[in-house]
Image 1 (cartoon, rainbow, N blue to C red):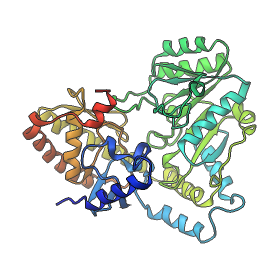
Image 2: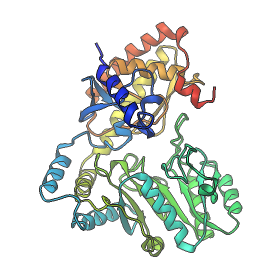
Image 3: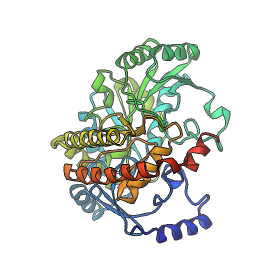
Image 4: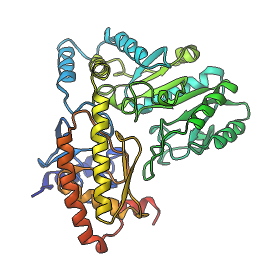
Length: 422
């Protein structure tokens, strides 16, 4: 029997000492009823909450778990560096070694700079684009997520109109909309931001249209602006290179995060020589940006990326998961579709405008030890095996049966109703 007493107690304590009890993208308020908020540990592809319940985890800490929680090879590198020191008065040699390793892997890049979060990297990309020619306007696709800074956070509290005065929005994958937005910049275009593919929440994912990607490259060149691919979420889950290498389009800048240290806090901005001088002008820093432990973790992660079939294994289990789940849903008479790369799918029922089926299904799966999301893209990790997928599909088969039995009594989730303004 699943317990949640410790989780409830921690939530009550948190309400007293943390504003709102929780904040940001890890708040369980957006998840189905009963999902845990607090976790005690993880190993491989499994996650343990504070009440001792164990889940096969498809969220991977919202991305950072690439190789498996506590991957032994990365953990050994971390332990060796911890014995020497972590945050020192200056960086260690791993900083140079990591930059060399990343430049050798990412075909568009000639240099790398390191920070802590994806939002740091996209902020640095924005600043570099503006420093490049002293222009102000940046183009951003509607509903795309590029971080939680004032210029890009999806929540308006504390944000001024001035913070976004020079952001122009366009529709992703629409080359004409992009061209119209460039014209709206009226000669003041600093940069064009693009996600590797459309991975908005509460929406079906869509691969990048090569025509749109080529249009973005051409427009950046024509107007002497910088093209930026935000690979924070998708980096190393689509390709061993920048994700747009798959369509043959090279950006000037790419932002990286999440997977680089397999859970250690590190992110990066990478760029070509065109953007080097502008980036060198920036004053960007942080007390922990130069810490050695995350850098050696990233070095070991990249070694595994280069030398193993981690990506192909993730693609294999992702295909098994997608095909099995869609077959089960069709057999149950409640068809759903998993869109996006098989390593980063989003789960949506075909006839579920208020997400009541998605939320109810994910709750049933959670009760059976499978942690899924009803609104966010999920993540495969390299520790996941075909045997794990077989266990998952056994649990989801039971989840569909429960959904069929209770379908008439399922109501929309309060979190979704609030989002929709109901």
